[in-house]
Image (cartoon, rainbow, N blue to C red; front, side):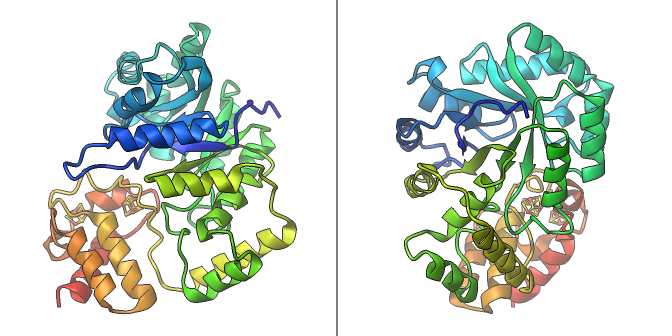
Length: 369
Ligand code: SF4
Ligand code: SF4
């Protein structure tokens, strides 16, 4: 395998801490970046479409540390392209926002059957090879929430791809929709390194109901619930980097503790996590990752992932003041679930294939009673 030399833990810059004004808190982000670098980790992942993230990366990282002391990953949003030349424009904008003239790891963002058409139409593959030849891109890859079949075809057609970023965690490993194991196996078959996103599934594996949480606490009373998820991902042999989208200092500290002096999980520990995934799957919750791809297109400005998160709490723990509070917070600055007009824009953007209009009906019935 042409495993690219990288530290195991990557800093996902998608969910950075924000102040009351909604702006990214650069002081806190800078401190989190410093702690991360101080432990010898170097990989920072952002994207053109992560709201304010690229500029925050420049201010909190690029302008404060020598360029050769870290590596940057960012992504081309093919769905925003209308013509071939847009690749150059979007790439240059990313470089300007980041304050750099090269990107270490540049990805086509979310290659799915739908987006692949665009990336092929504008031949972003040849474009990336050209950028690599110019030294503007150091390594070229793509992220994907697609299918194993599509992934296999793309990797067969494009030997220029050097790495692939996939959603992998112990809950999704055998999940019929995400098919994380199958996706991972395809990349392993092509002998390429994997960058893992969503190892904690947008935070849903950071706290668990009593029964599975008890199993983890019994196995290691000192380890956090989230650390098991990060270690599961990092233990896969093909993995180059595990991205963790860190939003506060405690998450940084927990991740640094999990992966400093890292030892892979043994077979028994991995099996325990897959058994726990089975227990969780037996609860009727909605497998929303909190990616927010559904949010921008909603004409009623419903904060869909937050509403679903409240619904999940209710489904798992029953009606409670905590679930009600989560819902009240979710609709404070946006539309209520009952205001959904059923247009379906959200469902077609959702990588998890969720029937969001139906979920909004359920949330309205549960919380607006
Ligand atoms: S179906 Fe409902 S929740 Fe989805 S985008 Fe339309 S109004 Fe928003
Ligand atoms: S509903 Fe789907 S698109 Fe929206 S945040 Fe959840 S997983 Fe992402």
